[in-house]
Image (cartoon, rainbow, N blue to C red; front, top):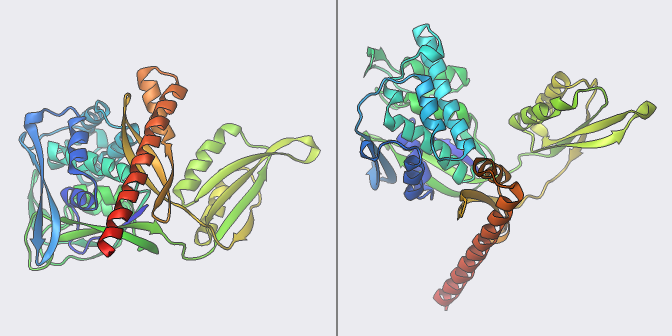
Length: 406
């Protein structure tokens, strides 16, 4: 699943959470994730309600923190997140978002990221916004996020260091580091917060994708304005805007330890799949064929990456006219070992297969000192139960629809 963020009135952390909840992520899951962060229960609360912004219904997520503005260093934020009972990929992304914030603040104040005192963005509400956003993206099965140009406000804002020009200096640095396209804001004031900018910088590609639209989540901003102060998250499946390309190259003189890093960079650059095939090359030497499947529009970029990151001198390209894909969704399961995600495969609207996420099983096995096979088998059993539940839900829905049509 992919998401497109339509942000005509900007973005904040709670607006992003509002989009996720409005799109179907249960607020109970958000609260459970934050409870797992081991923050004192009396210091925070999360409430949601339906609101109307100039006639448009939206979900407002109201994050309330009772500690005031804490002054934390990046290492303190890392320690809080690392101690949380949330999946490792969520921790890694949340720390990456805060690291972006630290880098931006350091550039603004002429110091190093480790010396930065987080003010507003070090408070409990910012931790909730960022960890919640990362968890929601993961649990909703959103594999890639796109975004519209970012509207910047104007005027002055009261911040920890006194009055600052808007957009806030850290916000501007975050957007610059992400090469984000900007447009004038809908009016004076702050429309993109540092937290919102950091989420965009970490996750978003600033373009509108071709997609099959499945549903829309609308998150409300706290302020009322003469226009709808909302962000809209379009959720759907990526739709190929052209043909695919398969890139290949034979390699027999590269350290095998380097292939994992090359694969990671290829995936990050837009590859749909990357694989290695062992072959025997000239003079009887063992080698591999590095293969990459990607949209044809990404060919030039990926070829340059392969030439830079490997020892090869040439890359072959084969056109792939079409690729048929099944829809997939990520569902959270509760097992005897804790929460584990599963990938559900759909053909049309029918759930036809399910598989536990390997990284979740591996993490649980390491944390509990259990054989990976044992954790995977347990998760697989629960995943099959989840599949039966989904199928039963589809049957019940079909029966209801049939009765209503009679």
